[in-house]
Structures are given as C-alpha cells and as structure tokens.
Image (tube, rainbow, N blue to C red):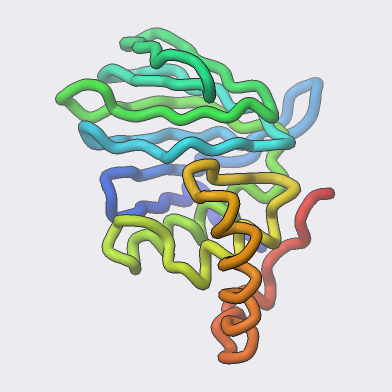
Length: 183
C-alpha cells in the first residue's frame, strides 16, 4: 500500500500520529513520525516484535512504562527508546498537548497496521478498535505486533470465532490489499 506523506491518522481518543516519510540511514529504512497526544491519552501496553521505536519530547511531559517496571516521566528535550520486543506504553502525563518526534525502524507494516487500528478505534467512538478489525489485524500481524491489555483468552478463543464470522459475513473485504505480515 502506498501512502502520500505526510500521512496523518487520528484515533478519536486524543492521539494524532503523522507519518512524515520513509528515510534511509546506513542501517536501512526507518519511518519518521510525529505524535500529538492530548492530556491523559496514549496507546495501551503494546509490543513491536521486529521494530525499535524512539520518541523525543518536543513539548509537554511523557509518561513511559515498560512491562514489569515502574513508570518514568520525561520532559521536552528527552528521548526514550523502546528496543524491538520490549512491551511498553506511553501517555501524556501533563496538562498541555504532548508533542513527540521520532522514528520506527525498520518500517515493515507499522503504517498500515496503525492506520487501520486508528481508523477502527475512531469509528468505534475512540474507545478501542472494533472487535472484527482488532481480531483480524492482531491475528494477521501477530508476528509483528501485540496489544498486551487484551486478555490471552480473548486472543486464543474469542478472536478465532470473531474472525470466522467476519469472513463469513464479508467484513474483511476491506483488507483484501493488506500487506503480508513479516515473519
């Protein structure tokens, strides 16, 4: 799937993410990004199995938590890096908008996955992605991403049933051009 840059997505829950473009450095391609996060908002505990993520605070205060650790807080000028495979979450820990610039490396399917998750979340009132979309996307890209706040029982039992009915009712036709997952 080809996007035109900058490419901005919003989830209806106070998060706006702009993909600024794919860049190149000696180690390969990376996606340059910019986040705008409202007070108290931020993504749930998640993991990128194949990608490193770095965010530099431009404005505001970011709260960061790595799975199993206490939260940490950083202000403008600070940079946080999440190595691939490290479960983490972040949020706007201040009262003013949080603005971060950063990158995700390598690019893989981050843009497609987040574009569809944000779209579904926005269409679902900004609370969480719709059940059919979450089941499909998290199953298709399970080698790349996971949302750890979804119980294992839901992923192992409910998602397969949801996917079955989603396929049966044609709900996944919109994903017919979805890129293949990175194994």
